[in-house]
Image 1 (cartoon, helix red, strand yellow):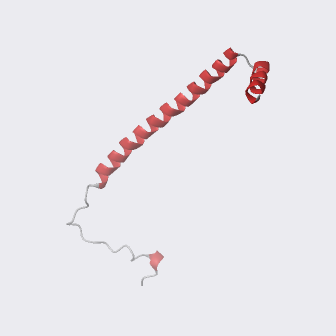
Image 2 (cartoon, one colour; image 1 turned 45 degrees about the vertical axis):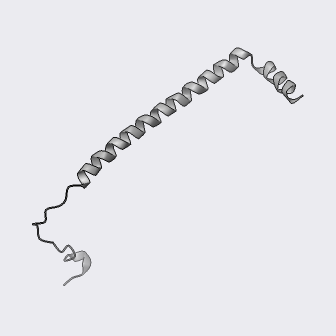
Image 3 (tube, rainbow, N blue to C red; image 1 turned 90 degrees about the horizontal axis):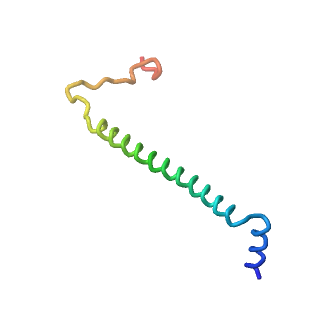
Length: 77
C-alpha cells in the first residue's frame, strides 16, 4: 500500500531519468567534497610533518637566561 502510494507520487512528479539525473548530481557533489577533504587532509599532514621538524631543533644551551620580567609592565623598580 505504502509502496504503491510512493510510486504514484514519484511517477506524478518524476520519471526514472529524472531520478537517475538527480542521483548522478548528488554523487558528483559528494565526490567533489570527498576529494577536497582528502586533499586538505594530505596538506595538513604535510604541514604537521614540517612543523615537527622545526620543533625538534633545541635552542642553544650556551646563551645565558634573560630575565624578561624586568620591564615597565611588571612594575619592577
